[in-house]
Length: 138
Image 1 (cartoon, helix red, strand yellow):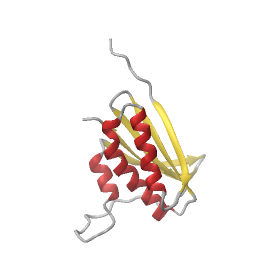
Image 2: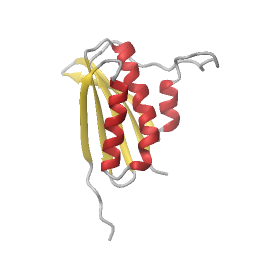
Image 3: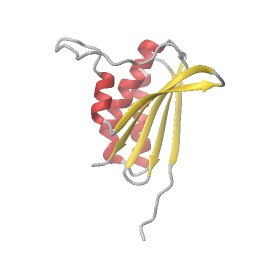
């Protein structure tokens, strides 16, 4: 009989600064390595870096949180959470070859099994958002 591993949740809270994308990559790669999900590290680092960079550049918040939930042996959900209820990610048109920006969320969609944006509520008020993506081992 195959044993089922429980879900495990890990979280990093950090200042929303220019060095935070690197810190987020280190946190995610360390967490995935420690939990036996090393096959997901490369894609996870690209995706979390883009999502955290978006928060740092656009959300105008003092902090950002990175959440990692590992599921079983072959799957993880990673989310980047911020407290800006107003500025939300949106789908842009295709980036031109000379564009230096605008590919992040499209890249997250391409690399992940599933992805999305969830609003964070406090009663009837939106108080933030969570950009999440799920990765699965090949």
